[in-house]
Length: 418
Image (tube, rainbow, N blue to C red; front, side, top):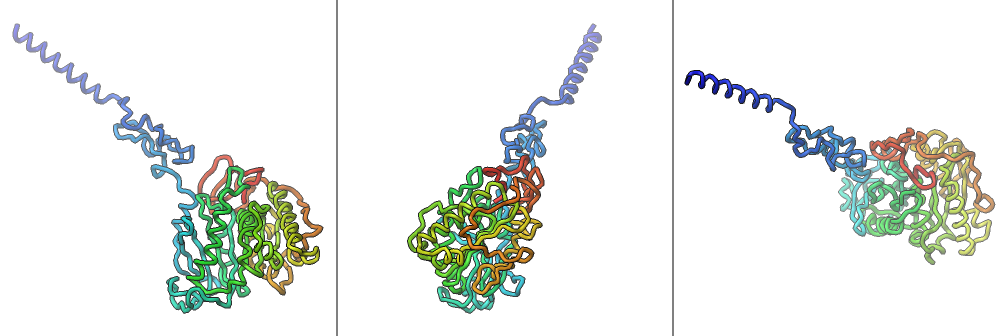
């Protein structure tokens, strides 16, 4: 009897062990910390984590941390953060001069700039080897200060690099997460931080750069590219042009009517300020209205400053002959078009220039009577033009810094790229 009972107990014990073994081998429903990888931190399609439905943590084991946003476990870097990964420092420009690339804080904004000049024109504070200039002294070489378009492409391409026609090349990077001068509303046309950014640029030129390099403060020129032109025309020029006597401003592929009152000394400066508006036949549809409006606004400002029509036409000129898209002044693409315009800057902007834009001809058409530009068609968004730093948009446009957007970047009124 005892033998029979012992046998029964042995069988029961074996069944218990077998059941436990099956239970341990079965798939666990325990989501760990991961909720099957669809955790609230992991939906990368909202821009915070690139396909974060569990690529790096599907949560089907005890340690699945909820799919932390997919690749690299977190948020995408902004254009500004990616730009910060590109080192600054001191280098040799393509013409053999020296380029200083550094970042300073101005009005609590990080302002990164590049300036090219002969080494002996820099001050000791710059760190340039061979620097001989004393700070805050006047030099013989002027400046051409470039404000890039949205995304920052022209800052890194630095089309005005080196010393050209006795002008040091200077480029300034927008202190904005998306590298947009003046920031931008969701439509991309208005620039809510235009006044703040313009004040920082003025401070850079008048107080910071003189500590680093000696230059002729009465020979400072400007070049705006796309969104940079919006900020220059809309905010910088009406507020600060009085600080730059005998200056010139090239507004390429963009413009904005003054968004702040024109200061009295800026109005006076218009009597000696060269302004050239350069566009293309296939300009962005949204800019086809803004550019003529900007032309009319500055023509009216010149009249208010006491200039005759002939005087205005001698100082303010316009052209949109090139048969290209946005900023494609060579008829090819954005980057090469901006480079062509920078290469021909002296022809168009400086005294004695012949007005020639290579491949186009004379572009110095007085604005009086030519305010209403005629365009062949309007370029929309995402038409395969290069801008920014390699960002892909759904219709082929490259912009940004390698970010992929599903539907192209929306900017106001079909503007698409500034």
